[in-house]
Image (cartoon, rainbow, N blue to C red):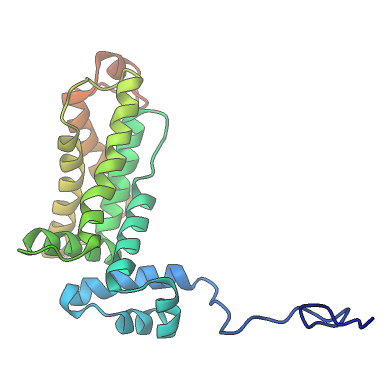
Length: 225
C-alpha cells in the first residue's frame, strides 16, 4: 500500500498552505481605523475601498476579502469603535457615566472621533439614507447608554421613568461641543482637563436623575448637589 494519503501528502510531509495569500497580521484593525480616517477626510462621496486599502497599507483584495462593499466596511468600523468606547461596567452608575464621558471626550478629540462625528453629521443632513452604517450610527451608542441606565435603575441608583435618550444626548452633546471648541480655539486638552470636564458633566447629570440612595453611596464620596 502506498504511503501517499488521500490528501496527496506523503507521511512526514508538512501540510501545504491553501491557495491565496496568507492573511496579513493585524490587517483588520488597520483597515477599520483607516476607514474612519478616510471618511473623516473625504466623506461618503469620496470614500472608496481603494482609498482605505492605500491608507491601511494593504492590498485591495485584503479589504474585499473581509467586506463586500464600502457600506459594510463603514458599518463594521462604526459599530466596533462604538462598542469599544461604550462597553463600560464599573459597578456603579456614577463610575459608569464618568468612564463613558472620559471615553467619549478622548474619542472626539482624536482623528477617529472626528471621522465618527462627520459620519453622524452626514447621516443627519442627508435627505436620503446613505447606507446601513447610518443605522449603526444611531443605534450603537444609544443601546449601550441604555444598558448603563437600566443597571442603575436595578441597583436603585437612578430614578425610574426618566427618558434615557436625554442621558445619551447630555453625555454625547457635551463631548461633541467640547471637541468642536477645542478645534476652534486651537487648544489641546490633556488627560487632566478631559477627566475634570467629564466629572463636571456627570455631576450635572446625576444631580437630576440620581436617587437619594445613590447620592449617599457615591463612589467619589461627594454630594451631587
